[in-house]
Structures are given as structure tokens and as C-alpha cells.
Image (cartoon, protein in one colour):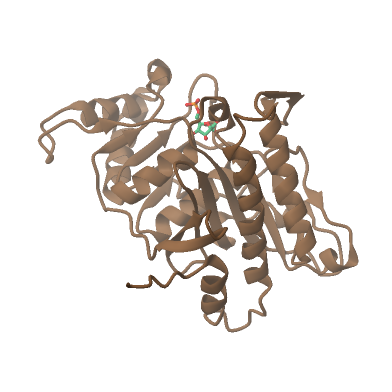
Length: 341
Ligand code: P6P
């Protein structure tokens, strides 16, 4: 019988640690603890339909969005996991208006900060559609021995040391990068470990999937409308229309397009004039992954997502990401028709 050697997430992290000459394991420990919290959240997500942890918590987050019970649970799990490592001095999460600074002496010496959307797409929880966690890790700018400061969190995406997501779908996967490629790990419930299943992910340079909420079509910028029509025409090099695929869960839509090729678009809309998705804990980590996998991520206004200097924790940006040639084509349409807006 051929014994398949599985490489667990922790073994992989330790193996790759040698690539960081000055790393003493702090980043490795952070990533491992994120993996542990992900397994705990996964356990609750998977049984959400069975126990009374579905539905609304009765609270609202900073965005004014109703918080699901699982949103709050996931937020607490990742905060606890990051606090206990001693490597992280503070975090910014979608669920909290301000930064959360850890006040123990150990944590004040933490070299890293984390931005995280603990449970993205949570409106899909109650209908059993895939949801996800999205995180980014930065080195702190403020001095060691003190509490984290807001400046630590308002760094350009190019300064991320690691980024990733967990997708709670038909299987649970953790996909992350430390700037040396993108690797995917699938949770094997029989051993409770994330195992390397998608080494060195490279996204196709083009594809035939476009992902956008066409319910907002009327208010899209003219160039986006023209690009959607381009996707629907059959006179492209593919000689057929593209397929429209949209789950309404960023991690699920991005993950599918990452593996198959495709483009995800969230333009500015009437409800979200500067875009809906948040720069710090949705767009930057996803953009880092997209670029590391050979793809692209921009705001449709001529800016590379990773170059944008954040002005506030919950800043929103228009977001276009995926296969490089498809994002290039969408930008071409946007720039060609932007004077018509
Ligand atoms: P809409 C989920 O609420 C989310 O933040 C992303 O996961 C998703 O891509 C987007 O919003 C969906 O937004 O307006 O299309 O429902």
C-alpha cells in the first residue's frame, strides 16, 4: 500500500522558517495559532445548523451590519489565539471599531500586528454557503515594550509579512503566503490537521469566469457596464461568453477564481460610493495572495491595491482582482469610459 506522506501546516511552517534568516519562530508561532483558532471556528461553523448559534446576535458591528452569533464567536476565538502567542501586540478586526492592544508585558514585546475579518460572508451562514476568515500580518512600527498604536495598522499592503484566508466550504482550507508563493492546506478531520494539498498555487493568466453582483448594474461606472457586456459577448478570443459566478462571499468567490482563473469585481455603487470591501482586512490580504499567485489587484482608479496608504481602519476601496489579463482588460474598459461617468 502506498503511504501518502502528508505535510501538516506546522511541519510546513517550520520547514519554511529557515527561509527567514533572522526569524526566531515568532511568525511561525503566529501562523500556527491562527491555524488552531481556524479549527475551533470550523468546528462551530460545521455544527451551526444543529445548535442555536445561527442567527443574529442582536448587536451591530462598526459597519452598522447586524452581527451573527458566529461572527462574535469567531472574533473572540481569533483574538484569544493571537493574544496568547505573545508575538502579536495588537489586532484590528472588522467586528471592532478601534484597534485592540494587548497589555501584557509579553504581548507589548510582540513584533507583529494582525488585521482580520474573522468571519467574512456571514450572511451566508444561515443558508449553508461557504464563508471565510481573512487575515494579514505586519511588523509593528511602534517601539517594542509599548502597546500597539494606530500607525502600526495603517501600513501599505506592500508591507505585509504574511496574509491568508481560511475557507469553510465543502472542505476547510487554509491558504496563505509569506511572500514566497501561495500554499493551500486542507483540514483532514480524521487527524485534526491542515495538510498541504495545493502547493505553490499559480492562478491562470486568464479565465472565463467573472464575479460581480449584477444587481448593482444600473449604478456601476460606465466602463464596468461595458466590461460586463464584453464578458457576455461571444466574439472574444474564447469565442463564447464568460460564465457568471457569484456567491456573495469574497473568500469563496476569490478561491474559485484563484484555482480556475477568473476576475472578481466590487466597484463603487450607490450604496458604497467608495466600494464595499475593506482595505485592511479584506482587499490587502487578498491582493497579496493574488499577486503572489501571479494575478493582480487594483482599485480601478489606477492604483495597485497594495500601494494604497490606508487613512482609517475600516476604509473601503473599489476592488478588482484575479487573473492578470482579465484585470488588465477590465481596467482598459474602466479607463476608456471613465470620462462618461
Ligand atoms: P454584496 C460579505 O458581506 C462581503 O463582505 C464579501 O464577502 C462579499 O464579496 C460581499 O460582501 C458581497 O456583497 O453587496 O454583493 O452582497
